[in-house]
Amino acid sequence: MLQSDLTALWLTIKLAFITAVLLLVFCIPLAYKLAGYNGKFKPFLEALIAMPLVLPPTLLGFYLLVLFSPDHAFGQFWFWLTGTQLAFSFQGVVIGSLFYSLPFVMQPLVAGFKHINQTYNEAAIALGLSPFKRFVHLIIPLLKPSIGSAFALGFAHTLGEFGLVLMIGGNIQGQTQVVSIALYDHVESLNYTAAHQLSLILLAISFACLVLLFKFNKSIVGVKQ
Amino acid sequence: MIKLSLFKALNNFDLDINLELESFNVLGVYGPSGSGKSTLLRCISGLEPAKSVHINNQPVHELPSDKRGITLQLQSCPLFPHLDVAGNLAFTQKHCGNKQTSLTLQYVVKTLELQDLLNRDVQSLSGGERQRVVFARTLLAGQKFIMLDEPFSALDWSLRFKTLTKLNELAVKFNIKFIIVSHSLKELLFCCDTLIQLDKGKVINQGASAHVAKAIYANDRQTPLSLINYDVVKFDEDYGLYQLQLQQSEQPLFVLPALVDSSNKLIIESEQMSLSALKPEQTTHSNVLKSVLTQAELINNKWQLTLNVDGQTLYCLASRRVWDKNDFKVGDVLYTTISNLE
Image (cartoon, chains in turn blue, brown):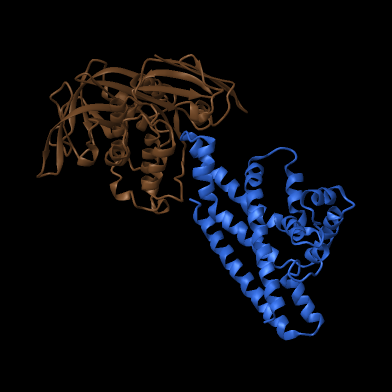
């Protein structure tokens, strides 16, 4: 296996892991609020979160590329803050992935919170459990299967990113070249052996993620009485 | 004296409660489905907002649930599935309510006979087992004011009576005030000292259980129930029966062990009783009580007969045809045969 492929593989796993963890950190409080919110803006919020499901990744990538450019206020702010540019950087790809995989992490969490709210939250309130204790000692432990599910989905979905990474990250080895782009390069240069090797590894990792996902899903069903 | 006032506008009617009750141990709330029983408990606990809730003239409607000092056990209350039975009980004791209670985990487990269930997964419990564990969990929140919404509906009558007896014992021993909602008058009559009857959000009857129950029999086409207090004389091992004696009386009853518990109360349904003017001889029934007919009222085309058995009251129904045929009169001595006890 080529050294550059190993680098791409490590970069992809790093990207998927960082994206999934960051999304969990952002999404757990957001999903908690959204699951309990029944106001008139709910359909708009839900649609906004689900947008990456239907948008072409290149479209998302294009808008982010514009946002990251030094001509844009956000790009300038980032440069002022870090001294680096977001476009064509690993950090930029991470931010793009956060948008790209958002619905895959958000939806299992919202479903988990809704199930807990409907089934267990009232019983806990009626027992006299304070809101803080309810969240920390009851809701989060009950949410573990949904957190696992959200992590597996977010991780697996980020592994397969192509269009968005190519748009905002380009194809820089060791910085933004993920497995899917390296695979594309091998096919372009007719190096099918390397393409097969990478494909098989990606297949195996994705399959393992899905096995984990269904294992967590089974646990979610298991907590229903 | 306990005062409760509450107002909440509902879709079809207003829940409007103004109660002043002499101190009680177990208060029963009786009423048809949709009369506002469960909503009443939910408003008191804070699960549902109400315009006003005052307990003993203190406004509590602005307090969050965990600051009201009240525990509510919801109908079909779930156990927490990520913990086993012991975990559910320990969780409540650790995180909920009042830590000052003298009610211990060991005492609750022993009283409700949950020893064999402690290590069980909550999803493996039967409906009755689950309700007993949920009740234990409610007790362990440690509050002095506990509300129960149809708490023992999945228990068979024998176990239900046994658990209701424990509830009475807990009320006395730990000075806990229980409010219990049930659609079963039999259940409420057995365990409550005070009853209120709700209809479309209003209290239409309130007072001592026997008094309210009598009004319910008269107004709601309910088959009357009788409550007999007894003392145990002995257990007859030859026949596997308990010999009981009515309190303040020497009249005996012979009953199956399943019907005897520490409450020393028996609920008798009117269908279990038959009357005769002459003492039945050579009968297959041994439970015949000498009684005096004190009242006869024609209710819903049936005669409801009130009988006095050495100070205790029995209610019996008779069809108009049987009443006319037998020519019973108030003041007559009648022999009441009670079936299905042995």
